[in-house]
Image: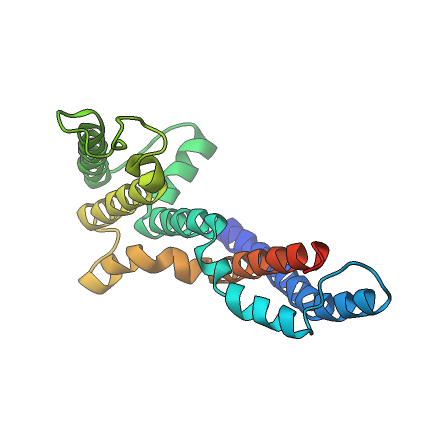
Length: 213
């Protein structure tokens, strides 16, 4: 527990430093782009009317970027595994090399694992079943609805599996504690989500500046 707390503090310090750097970069980029364009370099000026219009048109890109569609599911899964107590089992098995579980934990792992297998089987049935509704209209795997939503669907399966384990193992008690499995990742890694959004927005702004409007 102490090692985990130290890792958390170190990670939070790194995240704070990255957040500070990104904020400074967001402040300096418009100024540097303006100075560069004034000096005759082919840079997009974020202070110009065209730059301001571009900013307002693309301010939502950081929310719907492909990168963020990966960050949110991963964060939800990591938080669910940690909150449910599965992370402790994984850490003990890796550090000690032996998986020592109580009867209640073994039963919860068995039930949660069975649920996950049934969940995956259901996905495969929708993919390769008689109707194959997750394939494209031409019958191909890519592009298809399955490929478009595979990450989000898999993350939902792991989150529900973690929730089921937390309930059956009595690691969490009460419906409020159990429901915290669903949002623990957002609460736990909130600063990293913000960093990801700022990084995407900074990348888009750099592309605009570099392309010279």
